[in-house]
Image (tube, rainbow, N blue to C red; front, side):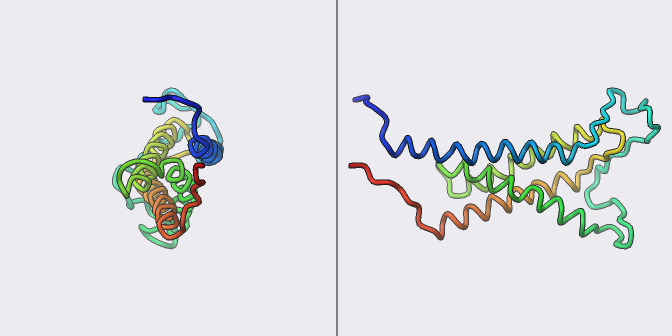
Length: 164
């Protein structure tokens, strides 16, 4: 096999992956900041100084919402909307490879992983409440973001530079 300098296509492809990766990292930082604020961590959740009883919503969609019963449209919309751009960016960096649905699955898997990290960390913040509803909605939001990228990439032609 002859090895030589990398082709222009490979260089362009690697450069085109840099921007979505950077945006994904920045957006992940914003998500972490927004979902973990006010950063009042305690190592012993049962003995926190604010006397807040720890509550984890293990069964999805069981948290009572004022004026709406079990369904909180505002929380649902925010969880979906927050992770939609995250899923779209995750899908952008994984558009290559085998499998037509790979970007969607990877976006949902990244969304699930980040959401699980967030919900686990929220257990140690006295004023935050981890929820499986949030975990599910964040995963769905990321998957929808991946689906949007997948759909757009299938309907719009890709600009691939020709090699001389």
